[in-house]
Amino acid sequence: MKKNKKLSLIEVISMAVGTMIGASIFSIFGLGAKIAGNNLPEAFLLSGIYALVVAYSYAILGGKIISNAGPIAFILKGLGDNIVTGALSILMWLTYVISISLFVKGFAGYLLPFIHIESTAFAIGIVEVIVISFFTALNFFGSKSVGRAEFYIVLIKLLILSVFIAGGFMTINWGMAKPSFDTVHTNGLLNASIIFFLSYMGFGLITNASENIKNPSKNVPLAIFISILFVMGFYMLISLVTIGNLPLPDIIKAQENALAIAAKPFLGDFGFILITIGALFSISSALNATLFGGANIAYSLAKDGELPEFFERKVWFKSTEGLYLTAGLGLLLALIFDLGAIASITSTVFTVIYIFVLISHLKLQKEYGGNRILIIFNLIILLAVFTALMRYQWETQKSTFYASIFTFITAFIVEYLYRKYKKRELKINKISTGA
Image (spheres, rainbow, N blue to C red):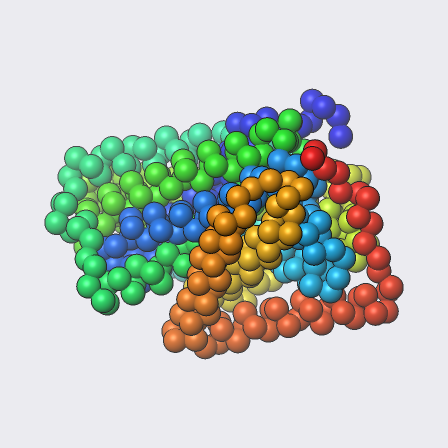
């Protein structure tokens, strides 16, 4: 790829911020309010701390292991070529596919009420098909087009959300926003924080595009920490304004377009229109960036021997299969599953991948750096988050729990069969390092 096609620091931050804000503030905000209640800002803070725990290892390894395979490249360096690494590579690609389905569902949830069309299954399905098709076409023009589009989409989105925050603080009822720390509310806070862990996962796109980033050894760590801290502050401000202006039952009732409804008390119909437009921009940017990251990882994992060769050709490398298959499966999942199940399964799979990244960092610590005690402490935190997430799924929706288990088992079976019958070997020399 030519040098002038590389993504700048601001462009890659825009991609990460666009994915993170679109992922939860609009798509699963109502679900989080239902779980956390008036402890919503604190839930975002706690989940941001989880993200920083993971970011420590991502930043150290991502600045030295330059590969669009991202975390799978880290795991490969730490654990070597085996069935676990292969299964995790399949899971990583699937998380992008699942995320795409999450975003198109969120987009339909805001668009249909805005244009006064009833949110029937058929209408939602039509919107999902159109949106997926549009952003697949945009990604046809490659990484630079994605980065440029991301910058302007995110800029418009943040301006709109800034108006929401400024207007909301003028009328906020601080009594409604006061947190509660009794047993019930604390449990809700903890449960919401593990679900909202999903809302920070966009920073992973940075390592999944590292081959396309200018000066990755410097800009990858910078982009990771800047995007997480920036988004954490935005999440807390938006959730504070929302629960301080709209009664909690109304937020939960308006689950599909909660922020647009929340803007009405202090901005009126103008606020509803403004935030709906902001939501559409937000979810668009998340979908745009995730399609880019999903296609990137499909290519890189194939190039490094961790997915079938069918995935190896992606659109900005003169062919289209990886991009189209990622988009197509994302659409299929959107048409089949509900929003809550998609969000929970995605969080579970990502957390498992994060755990293996930290295990790999432990093995690579002497070679690549990092504080060993801190890595172990961070690993304990992530194991606790995963345990809590699986417990939450078991207690609230057993079908989601079983779907998560099925996802893990399927990935291992597919990897086992592919290795057995295709005799695949890992091309480790294709992962470059800056160490």
